[in-house]
Image (cartoon, rainbow, N blue to C red; front, side, top):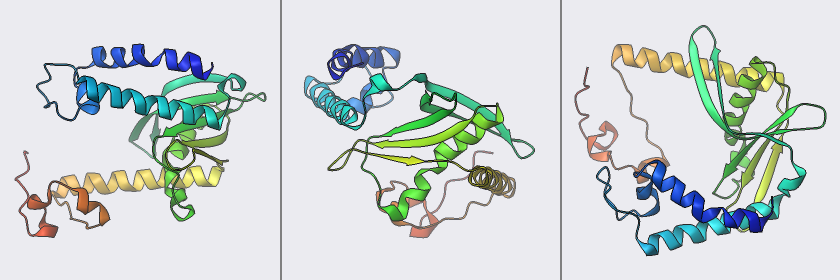
Length: 217
């Protein structure tokens, strides 16, 4: 579990990625058209992708020594039911076990760490995972976010409390109910935000004077 060993796995991993699903080629080479993928990414696109992977690997090893970590699961699927009938599931990037038997939920982000004002929102996903793990009897003692981008890679740590996890569960149940009511009433209100600047559906959005297509049911 060294950087050299990880680098040696990069090319086989990329080949496996492309064999597993040809559509993955689009993520490597945006010049390819989806869904009719008939060729591999160009040599230039593959080289750029490989360079980025190697950079992220190097940044990860600058954060921690994986040889000192007891990893008990990768891409761990967790499921559960919140409230009366809200079924949820997710995949945990990495699950570590501490000497006392408790586990730590770890997640990798390729971007940079957010400003402290926006950190709270980044924990919601991991808090939900921790809630699902506790439902099945696991003792979750910590959460970790590994940000590999930015000027310097950075790891943020948090210790989930029962009240925080309960609040996340209630929030998920609330929004699930709101979505169900919207579907039943066929009412989907538009909401403008800074993210609209990157949206390709503005011509169909009432917030920009567009007309939404008819619902297919």
